[in-house]
Image (cartoon, rainbow, N blue to C red):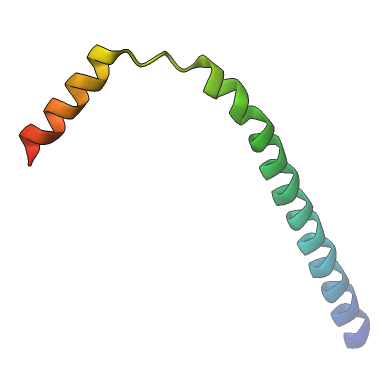
Length: 61
């Protein structure tokens, strides 16, 4: 009876680990496909923005 319990627990842990690995792999694949869409939504950086960024960085130093 104890051997059967150990077998069932080991089998369940392997199945659980396989499902977790599958979930992690599909989650990272979905987020990678979503990245280009967010990159397209970014606003354009103008020359004035660049100048302000440079000035604020030099003021902090």
